Image (tube, rainbow, N blue to C red; front, side):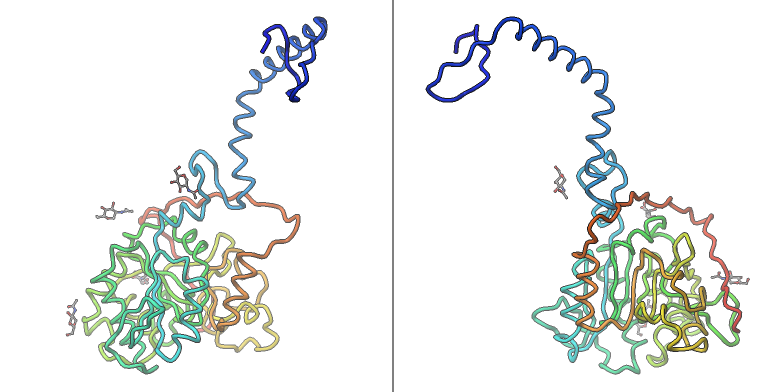
Length: 355
Ligand SMILES: *[C@@H]1O[C@H](CO)[C@@H](O)[C@H](O)[C@H]1NC(C)=O
Ligand SMILES: *[C@@H]1O[C@H](CO)[C@@H](O)[C@H](O)[C@H]1NC(C)=O
Ligand SMILES: *[C@@H]1O[C@H](CO)[C@@H](O)[C@H](O)[C@H]1NC(C)=O
Ligand SMILES: *[C@@H]1O[C@H](CO)[C@@H](O)[C@H](O)[C@H]1NC(C)=O
């Protein structure tokens, strides 16, 4: 191409147009001032460019730390969760498989604790029989197996039912400040009523509870202590778990968010929102360790788990949480919470006056 000509068009078969020299001077001046402006605003532009992923992902915390990852992806790597779901062969195809296809696929690892293998499910076959009355025995067997065979697969270990729905992203976000080396577990806190210490609580089995790796070790190594844990397999699984962990010195953590709203809930959301149906003597309000009342405002915007979610509802939860969008909804920037040192951990006492 002829060096004297500035080619503006590349249409085939036509000679390039020649630009008059005064236009050329103007163009050079224009380009020059553009370069000056570009130089002056370079830093600002780079910062803005870096912020693009933040605008795209509602839950990003800053491009420098995250690179191309979302907060959820970072937490998936850093807060590894093994989920185990208590089920029976009777419910493999009607419940368990739907858990696996919905929230279960977001666990770092998931195992179904049952009494028979299944070609579609990652199962662990327990020796205890499939009877409701031996849930406590099955729970001991399941956690022992996990401690012995799988404790390096994750940092935290959550037990859920086959009608629980768990938001893994929010669970990881909740656990992020804590070290898996702390002897602690979380769930929906119930008061232990009767002749118990004021700070004694246990976690609802239905909305699930999550043990740190250290709590898992203490439990698995301590559960044969006849003075601390029930040796028989009967009685309510969650109550016995709570007593045993309390006696072994595992802390019952406060799973509420910064605004003291519940993140675990042992019923479906409307169970909390429409109290008119149930009245204040409803078991939930009687035994809740925190927020023992009906309230719109006591459910977190970052919930972790609900209970009594049937298999159709599992997919409804999936749709409304992972596909559904409001057009024009504002996007929120998030910060990860600060890490907590064990010596700084404070667990508030129950605010429920019922004894
Ligand atoms: C982010 O980038 C890394 C390295 O370029 C790549 O291995 C990884 O898969 C990417 N992650 C995502 C979520 O795109
Ligand atoms: C937990 O303890 C182990 C062994 O003492 C140590 O190697 C690890 O760094 C600790 N992890 C955290 C997150 O503090
Ligand atoms: C607890 O007792 C069972 C049954 O006797 C035994 O198999 C298991 O090894 C014991 N666990 C510990 C941690 O001692
Ligand atoms: C419960 O309270 C008792 C008495 O105040 C205290 O000694 C114990 O350490 C507390 N336990 C937990 C797990 O907070």
